[in-house]
Length: 171
Image (cartoon, rainbow, N blue to C red):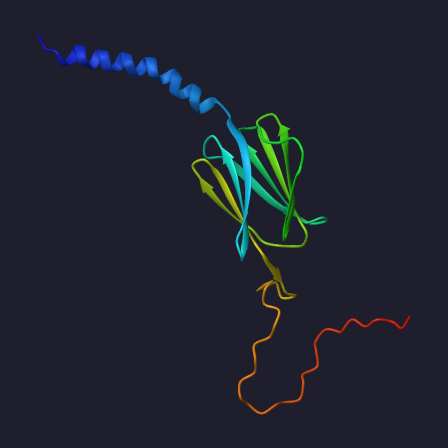
């Protein structure tokens, strides 16, 4: 008697029993459980912890400047009150269950800024540069306040600033 059909039958039966468990695990919404903020000299990084890799949309909105991240098929299980951050340019983070199956995080900024989102198996890493953008949209480091010292060239007359200087009215 061939034993292959009975082994094949046993494996098939085991797969039929496991299939509903796998499907049920995939149908459960992800869970947003934690948000942590770290600061580096050139960026602020926000780690959004979820129970699995999230599906999300992100939109940068003006007035006030904020980043809205909606996590699809996700249950919100983080804090109910806003988190005051105070790490330039990130002012605060708040979140909620926006609607059934959609958890929302709102990142409020002190000024216009960019961001980058990296997807991980257990959440998102949102990197916000700690640099100000100049009028041309180019980023300059906040720490770069002093101009570099001139080389040993002869002094030229001072260039006129392109933007009008702020002047105080006499009191």
